[in-house]
Length: 234
Ligand code: TMP
Image (cartoon, rainbow, N blue to C red; front, side):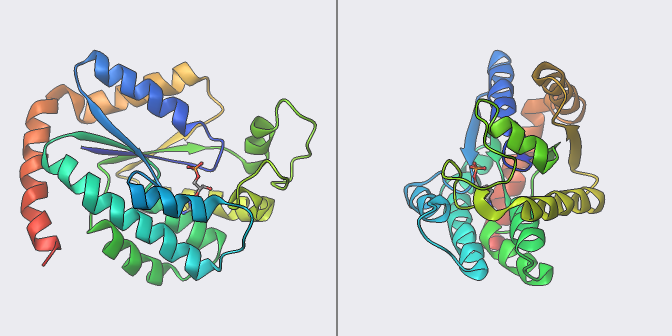
């Protein structure tokens, strides 16, 4: 099973992923937790290039770097894990590319679709939790202990976070559009709700859709993944 978390920077994905891993572990379900960009030696190096704020990267260069990192992670880690029936929890996947590079940077969505298909080998999440937060609120969280203005600017921010408030408004709009188009797998979550409330909702939804029949689900998933994996690499 592949579970992804999406949302703008500061929405609280990492906290929810941690909570979910603990809850799954209490049920003896060991999850593989990964983040994008990153997750393999090469992908972590690409992450550094992407987030370091000392240089500029063109929008297409940025798209290809995120995609290269994803291709590494998918082929090295995600495909084998799913083929072994593991539960994979992913902090960002290709919806981030649609939201950030498509809506944020303005790259053609058709072009994105083709590149995403190549970098993911066609793998799609079973469920995506989208933590929705207004960019102004995200900045408030980031700078809660300082007096830095709400501008998505400043030395504390990585290269992506320096893209400005307008960029983040477009990214959020991108997520909201994806949510309407992919309503069967996208779950909208109000990131302003308390951590425990969000966590309970996530567990309830997973229970309802998958966890009650975890073992039979994973067996089916493993069989399906290995079968289609062969086709994907042809
Ligand atoms: P994070 O690990 O703190 O979320 O940082 C990753 C940053 O990279 C974040 O700003 C979102 C951005 N990003 C994209 O722009 N496109 C992508 O495809 C992915 C995976 C992340």
